Image (tube, rainbow, N blue to C red; front, side):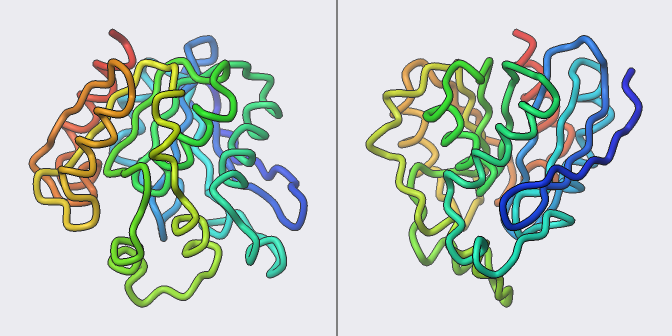
Length: 224
């Protein structure tokens, strides 16, 4: 097992905070958290994920301990989030990894799969749509004022490129999700060749609401 290594990676205008844990020589698994959260989002999954993977969790820019100046934050895009995550892998000398992202993190993981397909072994996207409508963003943002969070989600429009995703993909949806209705998850799964869809008895945070089922679903898919 690796030691838990909190690390700060310098980026233009700020820093990205990430933590590596789990098995040294196992396949790498990158975890990308939802909007208005942090790498602590994965606490309920961590012990099981560490049994099988070298786990890399990071705070997406504008979240947790990943701090950026106002300038870069104002111009933050989905591509910026993907490039930050790829920079963490580069710093760790990891060429390929599994990717698991939820909500905004799912969009960032999709962006990685489109920008750098050779860096993706398998892809899990949960509570995510290929494009996010303003009303959905507003529901999640509720009383939060960070421009980096708003821009990162509202510029997301990947629907026309889903056919380019090459990695085996699992889409996880919540049967009661008010932010990403199940029809949007179905559209996402239908757009990615060979993608599987699993619907859990949850709203928009199945990794918390149905933690055991979520964790087992992800591990089973990645180890299949």
